Length: 249
Picture 1 (cartoon, rainbow, N blue to C red):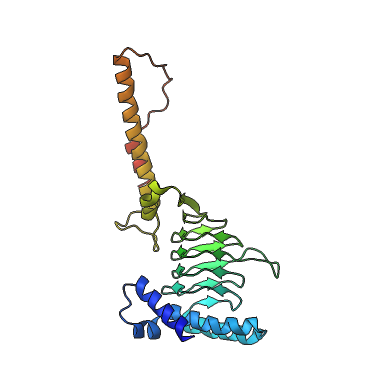
Picture 2: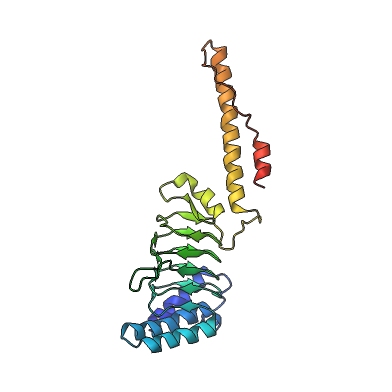
């Protein structure tokens, strides 16, 4: 018990720059209190003391503002930051080293008893403030869910999901896009310069297309000057990157 507690406190201090001491984390962090009380409730639940388990969970909700069903499975080193309004359903599974911000819901969309109704989070998943993950699917290891995203289908390992409904913007195997995905994810829904992350990504794509169009024109001109004929393509709608950028600002 005390080993797990020390482990939890150490993991919170690693991930939260506002944590100044172990004593402060132990006495002032509702996320830690909710995890400790959940372990008691879950132990009662697994041993058949269902009412006692629900009562402990109810008390924990009143003390911390975090509602974790006693049947949920919570891994090691899970950090619920701030935590007010977090709801974790009965069949949810939260993997080791996950980080969950305030207002997150790990909810279910099925009414069938005994079914897997709530999501499973892999190791090291980060879920931004206000996000809703709804359904009995898996969010892969190291995935990130942006602030206020509504996720209703599986998220691959290492991917970033943003929006409502959520869409995938980056996968682990696409190494060249890691920096762009990092800019798109934000636990609180804003980027470092306070611009909308999705708008920044769209503007980047538009600028990339404009650059490619410019390069193609130079290549066509070089080929023509070298005496190489190019098939004439009918003029399409003129591409105006400045106008498109204004639309997504």
